[in-house]
Picture 1: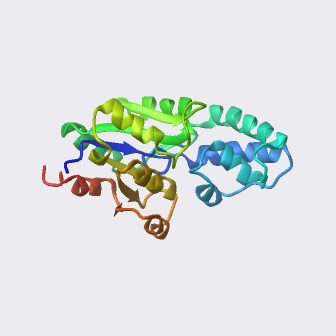
Picture 2: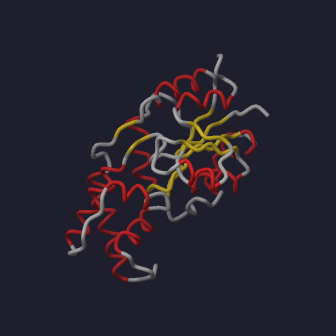
Length: 221
């Protein structure tokens, strides 16, 4: 089977955004008298969407808790101001995108980041590679590991799910790929460990972005 599309996770895969996330959430925590968390703690908390990050950060169990609703709204406001704080593209990503673009591989993003922010990241940091779709968290789209976003991208591109590689740094991404019947690639430069990706069932694991070319069969092209 020839792969025709690569669907990327965003945070921890294309970009390192942990500083902006940590700054924003810690601002909310300090405002309400909570202790703050480290960058490494936030690396373990991200992946399931912003509301779940807030819930875990303040240790609230009830998703319908009024305080969670308040803190979530404040986090959205903070992150809207700080989303690009120290944000950087991982080494090797631009080189990988160049190779994929030259080989006519469709590119897309599927993330649990709020969709409006996700689009800002792609527009600012990846304006030249023709990302066909950016699907993020919204009221109309279930969060990963639900397959809806990934399947919608494949449908819009006119490719079969099994013709897609789904690449990400967390167990959520591996589960999303499995649910969507796509080939899962776990990356080791992001926010999770190799063991977590193996336990989740990653079909391929790469240490550097250009290693994806061998999964695609493009390493000699």
